[in-house]
Image 1 (cartoon, one colour):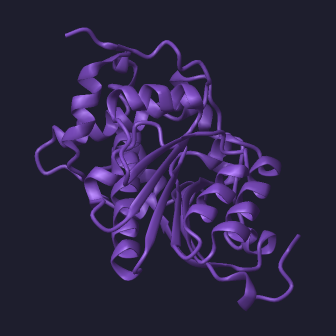
Image 2 (cartoon, rainbow, N blue to C red):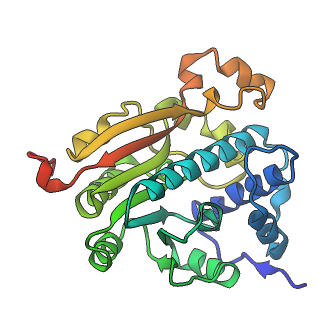
Length: 281
């Protein structure tokens, strides 16, 4: 079978989409793995891409799959607890969350750059409940379009492995747009601290790419200052999960707070704007 070319993916950040895909596949092939995603292995087998550069990346493998499981669980909870849920995956890459958590009740939107969506459509064709949007994260029109289509829906916005690649001045208006347009609902994303940014050149997968971490979130309450209808619900640290699976250097890092807390997953509620006074501009 002829493999699908990936040469059209030239953006440095977009190219990182192959990392979580491969890690999901490797973990699926592991007996008793953190996650089980057979679709990821099917996709890996169909792609003309050198995944071998990521074979020696135990920390990324564990961390990526912890994140996938965590966000899957957040999606399931949200879908189960809302009557009309819409799930929006920002920078979706070749994510298969709709297949994992089920789309019988929820509607999924998958947003990424046009070249990524073109590849995605050739492998994971969209349907009426799993919709692709070929848009930049920074084109705010996508949020208005989704809200217009679903004026009464509760929105779950997931940014998985996305925000840390861009500077704060680019991410701030995105979060403000999400909070002002897509409330009520929740926003979940992963982030690194400024320490995490500094060590990105030694990250066991990112060091093999042209991408770098640019946004360090040291104050978890900061997004609440940008949009007052946001409220921090929880922060979870990667190093607190699956403690037996981390390699020796990672286990040592767990006893050094700046390193143990360098990478995290956050969840915010987005309250209806009419219930909040004095929203940030």
